[in-house]
Image (cartoon, rainbow, N blue to C red):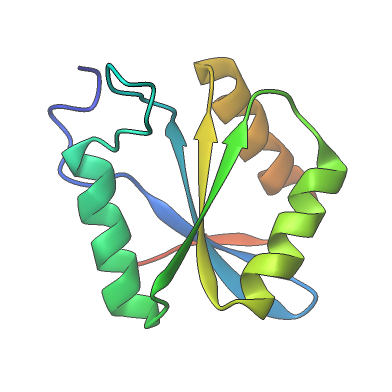
Length: 114
């Protein structure tokens, strides 16, 4: 598995409408029953973000194609529901494009201690 040597994956805040929303980006993994399967490294990072931000709700966003309107809606809904966003990308390229888009269009900061 690609993430087996990592202790945590990076987590970030994205500034949206004056608020900071925590998020993580990961590849989408599924088990034999086609259910989402989070690698232990992703679970550790989520737990750490919960501890740091005191947000207990996790919102899964599956990214099979790049859609700016869907992203904007996710930011609004996650903040309204006090959720951490977990973007699950179908490909490495989608994950890279997503992070590039965030960096170019929003202020993002690394969440420390994750």
